[in-house]
Amino acid sequence: MNKHKGMATLTVVTGILLTVGLFSIAVVGSGFSDIKKTQNYVTDASQRASAQAGLDCAAAIYEQKELNPKAAGFSAAEFSECEIAGVTITIQSVGDYWELASSSRYAISKAIIREHEGSVSSFKTSGGLVIDGGNAWTPAKGDLIETKDGVDYYECTAIVAGGDVTIDVGNSNAEFTSELTSAATETQEKCATNYSTHVPAKSDPITNAFENDILHNQPNIDVFEDTFKKPKDKWQEVKDGFEIKLTTGSAISNSEVVKNCGTTIKEYIDKGKTKIWVEGDCLLSGMSGAGSEASPPMVVIKNGIAGSNGGFTFNGTIFQFTVDYPAQSIADSWGAYKNTDGTGHILCKDGAMSLLCAQLLNEFKDDMSLWGATPFFFNGSYESKGAYLVDVPDSKSIVRGAFKPGYLDDDESSGGGSTGGTPKLVKGSFHDF
Image (cartoon, rainbow, N blue to C red):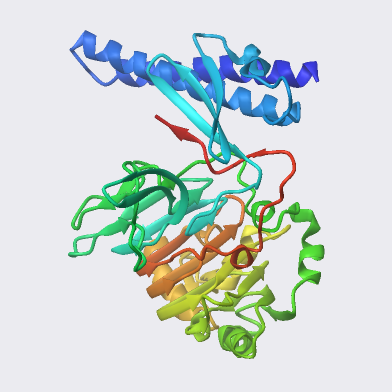
């Protein structure tokens, strides 16, 4: 245990020194003539780095010691070894959860601890996400922050990502919005201040500069465990609980089966089946129109790519993950291959994903590494009352067009539910202020 505690403390020191050092070099080399402004930038970077490192340390100690804020005698003193370099660690009860905070003067980093693990959102991925075009997202509704003038304001979460998030609305009149859709009740529901991202039409691409409804580069995201309350290596146990199990294989060698994947899934959902497991690639298009808010289905796609082109509606949750699945297999499923004429150019094979492959080819060109890192690509009009979840390491999903995912406030729609017991750190809840 002392070794783990020492490593947590070392994380604080190393994180602060590395971040401040790199930032200082960037500032000095930028040509700023205003010394005071330069000092302010360095000071701000130092405080933010200290706060974040302190939170990382406190989170590590919380998990290593298996702490419980409900236990008698529990206090912030448990994290005293993280309070170096001017860092202060606090923990306070906020309704049905606890807020773990690390502050360094004006900078604060926070995380949430609650009795049910995971964080809900409209789109959740262990990798990154690129959004091209105008989109209207319905975020997941979190805790009530305040009620004012007949309006309930909530903490909202639209996207949780382990990597970078980029939004590019392009040169059209489209815009990106993330806002709750109020039900027809006496009290309106809206996202609280700083929890509703808006990107105006005809804006430059934005990466990682959003409000708190879009969380990027979140540490240690485990989408599988957050969703099913089991570690990923127990996926067979989860599969055993599904009613329908399909095998589609490769979009190239089993083209017709993969083309009909969505249609087959819809047929089962129309018959009342709500838990469908797919092994292999899946063209989602034929699934359009399936599901209902009253009985939202869960569709799992293991070790395969997924995509769709054109109009698509769905009332349910789609979860996509891989286990020991190489990037080359993902590239192969799209049908991308190098021309043998000596030029090294990438071409697309005929298959279930050939249309999507041709669209990706315009963007990826001859970079095979990009093909192998893209498990999900959608182009068209997507509207869903359920979430889309991706657990593929080092990946980058791409959505293009009018992509409008939502969130069903229903435990069955996400395969989850409250676990009770010892409160856990919510892995997708780390914020900087």
